[in-house]
Image (cartoon, rainbow, N blue to C red):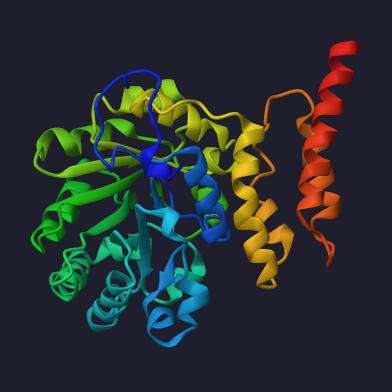
Length: 345
C-alpha cells in the first residue's frame, strides 16, 4: 500500500498542518537512506535533506547530492550560501527536481560554514538574508515552491528578543512567512558545533513570543525536543515542531508522534524493516553498501529487550563488502534471541 494511503485506527489528537511535525536537516545523518527509513515510520512528517551549498548544487554531482526517492515526499531541500544569485539558481534547480520546499540555513554555527559567510553568522546581516530569500522566491515562483528560513534565536552577544524580532521582520519583507527557530543562541567563537547544540540554554519562551507577536507567520520550534508530551506542549504555542537528534537515535519516536498527531496506526518494528527490504535490495543492486543504509536503523529497537544484540550484529557485519539482507535478518534474529534470554533470566 502506498504510504499516503494508510488508514488510521483512531482519530488524531488534533488536526495538523504539513509543517506541524518535521525532522531537522542534520549533516552526515539525514541523507536519502535516512529519509526513506523515517518516511516508513512517519508518513506525514516533513523531511529535510542535509544542508547542501548553493555552489555544490550548481556545479556538483546532482544525482549524488540531490537524489531522492519519490516516497520521501514531502521533502525539503536545505541550502547554504549568502550570494543571492547563486542561491536563486540552486533554489530553481531544487524546485525543478521536485522538492516540496527550499530552506535557507541561517543557523549552522560551524567554523567551516562561517568561513563561507553563511549559516548562523548571517543573523548579523538580516538585509542580506532578506535579499537572498527574495531572489530564491523569485526563482521558484513559477513552480510554486515555498522558501523558508531556519535560524537561531540569536548569535554571540545578541541576547535580547528584540534582535530576533528585528531579524524576522527584516527577512519577512522578502515575502517569507515560515521560520524554523532553533531555541538556542549560537556562539560563533569558543564553542564547537556539538557544544552549540548542548551548551547555550534553551529559550522556548522567546520562540513562543515570536509567534504571539507575529500571528500571521508560521513558526516552527526546534531544539532539545525528545518526547510526545513535549511536542504537544509546544504545539499549544507554535505552529510546528522539528525534532533533531532524538529522531535519529530513537527513530520509533517518529511513529509514536505520527500516531498521536495523525492517527496513523503504530507499526510493528519488524514490519518496518521488512518494508525497507525492497529499498535496500534495490540499492545493493546498484552497488551501494549495506552499512550506508543500516547505520540509520541502529536505534529502531532502542529501549527494548535485545536492542543491543540488534545493533551489535549490524555494526559488526553490515560493513563487509558482500553484506546483504541476510545481515539484517541475522540482526532481527539476534534481537529476538536476546529478548527471549532476558525473559527467561
